[in-house]
Length: 67
Image (cartoon, rainbow, N blue to C red; front, side, top):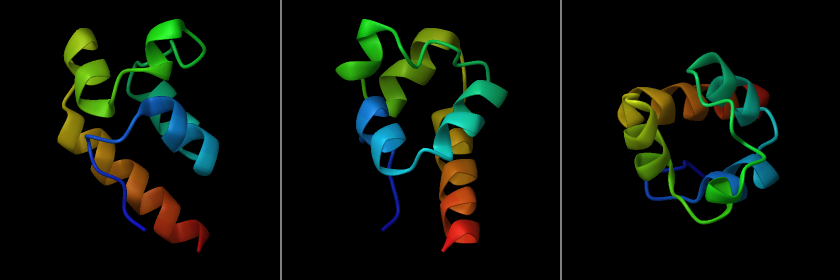
């Protein structure tokens, strides 16, 4: 199942722990903060000035490599 930028950050990390590595590489070091529990990927990326489409693409690639 592919993720989208509308998926909540915390849910993505919970279902796909390997995604945390991508978030960290892209500069989203706040996975444990309160905002990560209610923000989706698009919102979190916008807050950090990061391209959400790029992050989602990298996460989906990492997930597919695991499967």
